[in-house]
Image 1: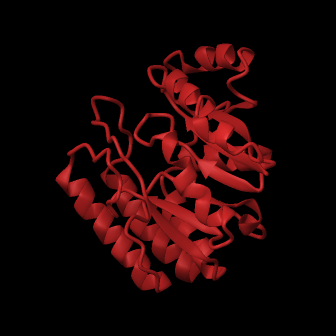
Image 2 (image 1 turned 180 degrees about the horizontal axis):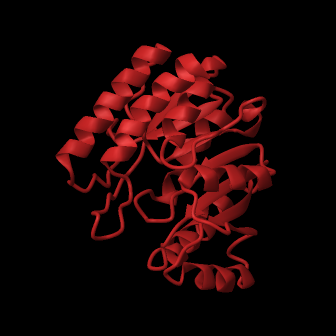
Length: 238
């Protein structure tokens, strides 16, 4: 079985090499010889030297498919570009900033492999991991809780972390789904659209090492407002 790992990248020169090494060096691949991986990196017009580093990494074999955007469009647009290239039966979204650890892959895709789930979200708030979480922004946690609660009201689900960056799903789940959001609106959009298809959702606990704005965090207040709009839009207007 082929696993497609889509890595959207924008100005991650300091971390992109390390995250790709983590993905490639996982014992997970050795322990599951029936699983193969393809790593698809989409550079969303980085301007900090990331693009040059990615070209070098491609030459070393750490990337299977490297896509460059001619203009900066956002995370959602980068994921769309990656999905066009993905050939795997299962797709994992992997941010390049080291907030999410690839060692959780086994936990993330196990419900799909076992035939229990079509979609799996890695929750930062379920607990159950030994690594703990970095303590950061209170209001981010409040906003996440509000967005997740509103999403649950609209979908009649009981997610704990709709905004998680760790999502895995069967590639065929996206059949007949047209994704539109360019930035972080991807998270509520795909959640609503997958929920409308009455798919089997699972959540699993994951480790999380959040970063500060000084360290490169990009999501902000406007993205939270957009997420609320997207939940309503894709539930009722799309």
